[in-house]
Every structure is written in C-alpha cells, then in structure tokens.
Amino acid sequence: VKRQLLNFQSPTTGLFPRLSRDREHGYVRDSIYCAVSIWSLYQAYKRIDDDRGKSYELGQSVVKCMRGILFCWMRQSKDKMEKFKVEQGPQHALHSIFHLKSGMTIIPESDYGHLQVRLHSHFMRDGNVWPIIYTMDEVNFVQNLVYYVERAYRTPDFGMWERGSKYNNGTPEIHSSSIGMAKSALEAINGCNLFGDKGASWSVIYVDVDAHNRNRSIFETLLPRESSSKNTDTGLLMAVSFPCFATHDDYLYRRTKDKVIRKLHRSSYGIKRFLRDGYGTVLEDRSRKYYTSGETKAFENIESEWPMFFILMILDGIFKGHDEQVQKYKQLLAPRLKRDKYGDYIVPMYFYVPKEFLEAERAEPGSQPRLPSAEGDVDNLFMMGQALHIISKLLLEGLLHITELDPVRRYLPAATDLVVQVVLIAESMRLQAMMATYGIQTQTPHEVEPVQIWSPKQLMKVCSF
Image (cartoon, rainbow, N blue to C red):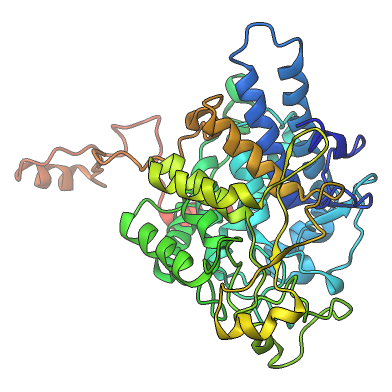
C-alpha cells in the first residue's frame, strides 16, 4: 500500500492522482477509492495487538484525503454550491479535479465534465463512517451536499466516465448509476450524527424522504438501462453491487448484472465500459475534446477492455457468497496482472486492439490478441485499479471481513418485519367522542401538550425563514 498508494498521496492536500506519473491533477473519484483501500488495510491491522503504529498512520492518511476533498469543495461553496441549489447545471457543479498540491481549481467547466453526482454521493456514503467532520461549518456543508444530490433523479450529469452521452459531444444526461449512488448515499447518511457519540441534535444530517423516494422509484424504473444513449454500462455494477448496493430487489440486481456481462464481456482481457466506447482505442483522436457526428460507429466491437471490472466481479461474488463467480474471475484476472521489481501485482488500466487486428476483431469480436495500455504500467500505476485489487486481496486472504469494509451494512436488505405506528389526533373533543363510539382511541391537541401539532401550511411558513 505504501509503494502503490501512499507514496503518491499529496502531502499538502491529501489527494491522489489518477495515474502515478501525474504530479499536477488530483482526482476526487480516484482519491475516494484509494481512501477506501487504505481504510481496508487499516481495519485489517486493527486485529493485530502490536501493529507498531501502522494502523494509526493508515487511518490518518484516510482522514487527510477525505478532509482534503472537503476543503477543496468548501472553497467553492459560495460560487458553486449555492448557485447549484437554485439551478442544476454543469456551470455550477463542484469540481471533480483539483490541483494536486494547492487544492485550487485547475480545469474550467468549459473544458471538463465536472458535474458528476455520484462523486458527492460516494463522498457522503463513505465519509459518514470516518471521523472527518470537526466543526459545525463542515456539518452545514455536508447538509448542503445532501441538498446537492437529492435532485439526482432529474439532474443530467457526465456520469462515471466523465463524458456524458456515449457520443462524447459534451451533452450530459440522466444516468441510472448516478441516481443509484445518490439513493445509497441518502440512505446511509440519513440521521447520521457527524460528531459521532460526542455530537448533539444539531450535528445530525437529515434527508428529505420524498426526495429519496423519487430517486429510488426512478432508479428502479430505469434499470437495467444506464441512460438514453447507453443501453448498459459497467458503472451499473458499482450501483447494484459494491460499493453502492443501491437495490436489494433480486430480480433487478440479476437482470442488470446479467445484461452487463452479456453485452460487455466478450473476451478474457476485461470488460468494456459501454458499447461503442472509443476511449483507449487506436482510432480515437486524443487531440480532439469531442467526437464528430457518427464517429462512435468506428469503435463498434473494438472497444477497450478493462481488467478492473474482473475485480469488481470478484468483490460482487464475495459479498453475494457466489464462490464459483469468485474463482472464475480470479482465473481470468491472474494472467492480465503484471509484476514490478518488488513482486507486487500491477493492474493495467485497459487492453486495446492493435491497428493490424482491427478488421479481424470487428468480424469476430473477442478473437484477436490485445495489448496492455501504457496507463497502469509498472512505472505509471492506475490508482483506482490498484486500490480495488488491494481490497479484493484483503478479502480473499481472510484479512478483512465484508462487515469491516461496509460497516453500515449497505449490502444487507432492510428488515422485513417493520412495524408502522399511527397516532390519531382529534381536532376537537366532539370528534374524539365520535371516534370513541367506533372503538378508536384518539387524543386532542390539548392532551398532548407540550407537544405542538402544526398544519402543513404553518410548517411551510417556518421553513421559508
């Protein structure tokens, strides 16, 4: 972990780059996954009586990373957060990339798809189990983050892969995976006291139940589709399984997962992100920001394949108890890993089809050899892939339990024996007597004092201040 992750953590902001060779850009998404990986090792070390201070160092590295993200976003609270609550547009989004050393903005909204609702949801979902909030200013900001993601069900964003529509023309769209992550985060943080056992009522986070239900209903309606332009997407694996566990409907889970595997898993090199994805292919012109109209047709059947998603399938199998799935994807992953001079495993970012094999691959998908990308090499680590691989190894070796990785038990469905209690209040003694004739016991507002009962109109007036 020190060689592959901690060595590349910024000493000033705590952020991580996407690729270890990058010394300028700190990515929020990759930083969160690195933090989860380090936290996993921290949990494993807690089992040891004398860890020689290693667990404390690991735990504080996680806190430093998450607080670094928090500080970067808090600097944008006035210019971005408050405006976004009024108008949900890409120009008002909190940034997803910051300067690795200073934490300042580095890429403007016009040049990058910063609006990624799942990032803020992921931060809230994992941040509520770590001691990263110290003051009421920070509590208030997290509460504002809740307002930020509550509208995920109607906020077009740039999705997991930061490009929006699969046509890569700068158009954001509604993504099922973003809504699923928002739903998961709202469930995890609702009622959470950010000061832990030392907190009071004012440090508790509240979620609008109606907003959560809207996200839930629309998410489950959209599944197994990802968006209007993407029939399916491996980002959905992260929504229905680790780390989100956004649905416990077994039918929706199996239908979504089976569709991802059926459509995107064509060879033993990895799983595609989505159909007609040009990223990493030899035909993609990286000098251009956007594709031309109809250009995605050229990428059909030659999309890059990512071994990182084999790791996600291993994690899914561990959480679901599917041993055959775990063994299958372990065997698929093993020959794709590299080793460095220390003997550590290196996860390539993706595998691409060489130019001379393009036509043969188009004619028979999955038949041609592929080459590993320069990203995710021994001297240029792909941080997110390394983080997920470390988590999977800890679980497979029995050094970490799934309840330690997911302490809020998101992987378990809600209890089915819920009891709904209804309190009936009669607005007058006359109505109370009438209800009593039918054997229905009620109380009047006078009898329940000092509790006050207000009408919805009165509550609306209070909330307007």
